[in-house]
Image 1: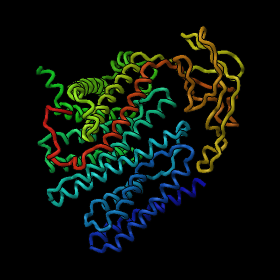
Image 2: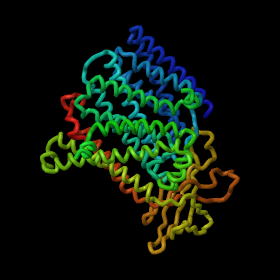
Image 3: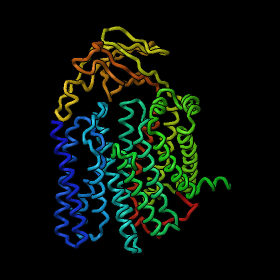
Length: 247
Length: 276
């Protein structure tokens, strides 16, 4: 069972990567329908990977699934809401995430038995949702910055607000899980904790910066884009396994 | 007055947030290969940990000390800003509650106060928390006395939970949890019998018992002894921590419900040094 899944998973990862590559090339050559078809294939491959890895690990929380989860949510947004967008940024990001997933040679890791808790799953799923929303906010901001438009980034700010809420839910459910399992709400020996708290402070800073008069749209966009890069790094790096050291 | 203005400054919050991000990212780097350092903090408490591990490897633990200092300043900054604003709002509290923007402001300040309560809870836990780690309780009916306390523990019945899934071949034949019927007694406080398992602690007169591991882990295990290992804790910071968490979530919900439509515009900005 495990070997078959690993074999299938590797091949589906390859299909996903090829589909996102096709999507990027089609977008670039201005063939929106073909691009949409490629993106759809990529999205369904991504969905299969996510569901198969998640169900294989049940009742435990699957490890190193964050990258695939974020990529799935971003692919859904691309297919459902950004089909008409001319920007290549999100398709390129999806290709990058698919490549990272392809580089990661082992799909299945032994989960730890203490992760069979509802709070552990909430921590993981809300964390994936939060990071995807924050990255999406950064992508929209970067799009506007690259186009040189001086428009208000209220849509991106709204995404940040909802992403922040999910981040809080993820962090607090992680704390409840940690308390019930280890007896303390914060376990400092897990690097994931420091990265989540770092993200929380960064985006808290963004929400505070709204209240500064000199906070221009350009600065706001730059801060959002930087936050997207930071969110991407802390989401992708831990899931790169042995390639983490190379980066 | 100048010091108060400094601590109510929004610029200070922004700088502190950014410094915290940098420090935590450095902490992420320091944690690589040194996780055992930080595992001990949950057992020894903050002061003891700083005096032992902090002294022995200052490079890898410095980020944590810096984190504590930054969080202290952030708490002062938050208290000053929120205190100043709430004192002003208190004069016209009913009118503030009637307005949507007033409810939004109150939600923001609820989040701020919740964060301070949360930090105070953590600090209390790390300074005044008592831990008796790795207390083994066997299935043989013998009573175990938790060292340094009057707590007496006995396992009355134990049931092993086997892995029933098919997705992870390595788990086949393994036990993934143990449910033990634990008899607890404390001199002068009576006794109690309650089920304990992984992620399901038992609480008894200020003490909390957490199952850390159990034995045997599989049917064909070499070690046939049946026992559970518990961490016995007394943590005065936990109620405060959970109050802080609940208040923070309520504050964020209020923030999302009552936030003004166009928060991204500079027209909605408010003067610096004025409010947080």
